[in-house]
Amino acid sequence: MDFNNTKNGDALVVIVSGRMDAITASEFDAQCQSWIEKSETKVVIDLSGLEYISSAGLRSILSAAKKMKGAQGELLFCGLSGMVEEVFNVSGFAAMFKIYSTTEAALAG
Image (cartoon, rainbow, N blue to C red; front, side, top):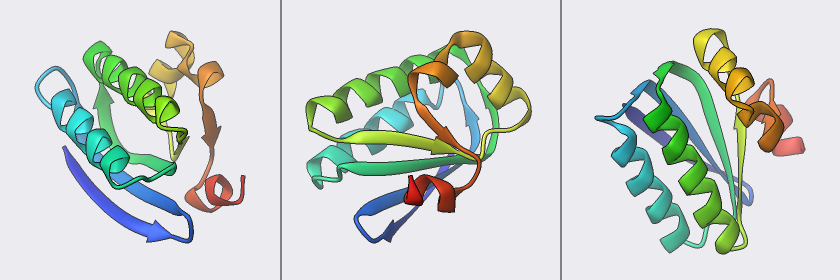
């Protein structure tokens, strides 16, 4: 799994690509911890490059969201498609998180 982080105003935009599974979910956890340590409060996660997400990936996202909320921050998601979008819908994550079609929409929202 790869991360490409860029700052856009008061938001950190993180483009995630690859697979988020039992092997790589800990990388997402570590990234989230670094965002909190850097006092990021608005993180837009672009999942357009994510090919696969497992239940371990979902647990990692849920854990990250709880940590961000505890630090008075929030995670926003965009770019979901295909299997990743389906997993978010079936798991109920689509109802739990703010999800936008594009990075621009997430930044404006």
